Amino acid sequence: MNYWIIKSEPHKYAWEKFLIDGRTHWDGVRNYQARNNLQAMREGDLALFYHSNEGKEIVGVAKVVREAYPDTSSTEPQWVMVDFAPVETLPKPVTLAAIKANPDLQNIGLLRQSRLSVIALKPEEFDKLLLMAHTD
DNA sequence: GCCAACGTTGGC
DNA sequence: GCCAACGTTGGC
Figure 1: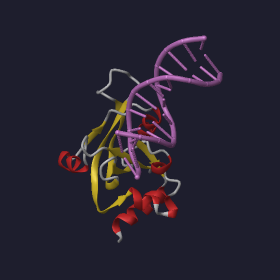
Figure 2: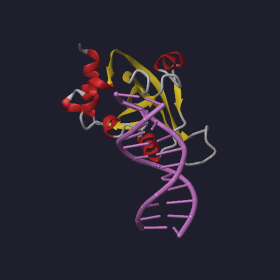
Figure 3: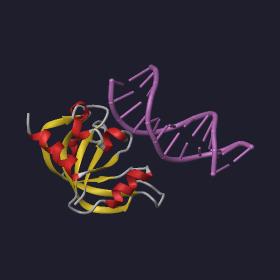
């Protein structure tokens, strides 16, 4: 099982919309590194849903319900999309500031490559972030 | 609105 | 193959 962070600007696609939809296509990725991460995802993998620009916090957990297949929003064949479904809304969102302040999370991809929209997470980073979301 | 990071493009 | 120019993302 692998763990990921997927980023979305709330005004483009917010967690709240995701909850209502119940399932979504993660399309529109046009960056090779992010695409490679999408292709490495397996059904059942968990991904943290991060709100970029506005909020700047991890708000929920999603799971992969369909592995990479051709992105219908592109005419170019090299791009793929993945389907996700919501798993859990975090009781306490994990802010970027809180991540930056945590010595255990200094090497997290979210900080090291802030521009990447699909980021791999180590299991221990995932656990740590979930713990932060469930404790005060 | 500015700027840093970084990917892409195109001239040579 | 190098590198400058430019575009995009996202934090501040």
